[in-house]
Amino acid sequence: MYSATTHSIRVTVNPIYLEDQSDPEEDHYVWAYQVEIENLGADVVQLLSRHWQITDSNGRVQEVRGVGVVGEQPVLNPGESFNYTSGTPLPTPSGIMHGSYGMERPTGERFEIEIPAFSLDSPHQSKRLN
Image (tube, rainbow, N blue to C red):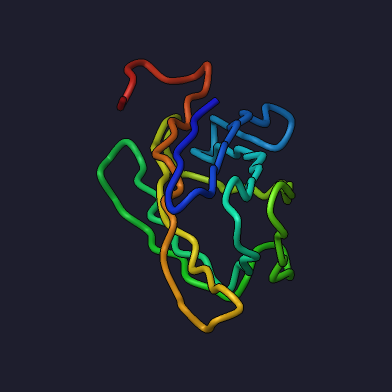
């Protein structure tokens, strides 16, 4: 598991290689990643947006920006957490992802929190990127 805390919000990610959805002979590798976002602070916060950078083992970078996560813009009271699972395919057997979430407090203050970098490793790789 990978974890980072920014502005009293902890993001923990657990990547899982999906063998049943991958096809190494076709250079198609798929991972799920489970994310937990925990509000460790004293303020209510809302997740507004996401920004991902996904790098395959050939160095190709894909950027993904969007509203919320899995169709939601969760509000987290102090002590609450939000969990979701998403996924990503790659044309290589390994890679790395990292990014940020755009957050907002009830005062209208907006800020970014870190999504920690995490490895996407499959059993089909001959070398590890990270």
